[in-house]
Length: 549
Image (cartoon, rainbow, N blue to C red; front, side):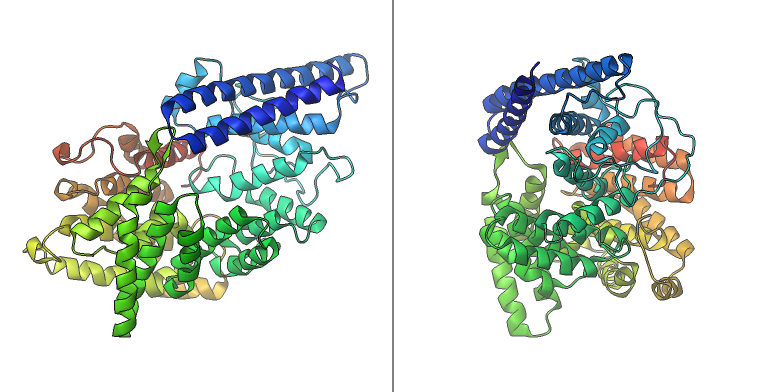
């Protein structure tokens, strides 16, 4: 192929893939989904053919003594092929086993580390986390990565400079950052925050006011010490706000991403007044998922009403919260003919709010838990604010145990009790075993350990998870709590080093069988089933690699 023909094939594949994804997102019907899926398949096959072309050209160059690569193939083309092949391969590795095994029958399979190395190649990035393989440029080779330790590499600078980089190198860098900093919320294998730090620092050196990297800096500060991934949400807020100032009106959707992150950061800190303007802006302006944004605003207003001491202000907040809760079910939309799972979840909770006489239990905290934001909450916030609030709720619920019908308007007692126990146990697990990426000062560690020991927190967490499992038959609507309890119990056992116990709990969820002792009250799937199963799939994969959950 001539250079023009090569680039024409590459650009055609990129446009076809983008058109297909946009068509699936915007259409909302099955016919369009099937048609666009065929376009995705066509684009994927073209990328694979282009990759084979590059590999063959490189082998011939080596045979001629001109290797290791064929210099007649420009880096712009190589970076484009790496982006397409790497993204496709990475997406395949995120699918559950039941889906990926079916796709593999049609010849579409990938290996996580090969896909990541392919994305890292245009920038010359290496990793101290990914295992060594004989051919670091292979994709979907099917070879099992070695587990032998390696000599630690210096990741501060890439091996490919800006002068020699390809056109799509920034896109491959951004893809790696999205994987390390966002997708890592529900997967473990291949996540390398040291590499993410190096990529952010390098690109911010080149583009100090680059809005994309400033937003990601909010997740990963340039010092590498204080950011959301390390349970430092306060320091992320300044970067997101600076990024929003720089975007102006040119990057409206990117501004929406920042508002989402800012809303979650403030919510995890229980600063509902601080979160309110960001949720309000999304509910009124953003279009990605109006149902989710309006639910986020409604829950924030509701919790503000519950914590506000001024009765008139509290009444005002509650009145507005009721208005937004009522709008959530009618704001749902479909993608490929099906509702988005998280929108179904918030719609059900909004309807439950109305059926229970305008009442929900810790809705903002539950929402943060379901979207994974709670895992980045500082331990000091857990111990000073969240756990005392949950303890008070559990005490109130326990006082109605002899007569559940006296609770609230007479409905939802066991659902609320199970939710409070699950959230209580999850928070205690993070107190006992913070995320591996979490960073605390010595003073923060002393304060946390003085308030509650690791042994006490982990024991109470286990008791809470087991309570949810044992009382699963009494739950009326929120059946997902039982499955989430098994997932959290498996994570806790992993922290204890009980890998067999962890695998047992995770396999129960992965089996697809009803885990309620009497599942007659549940019809069809439980809320957030796919999201929970994806987390379980990632957790099982991490256990196979010997990682702590």
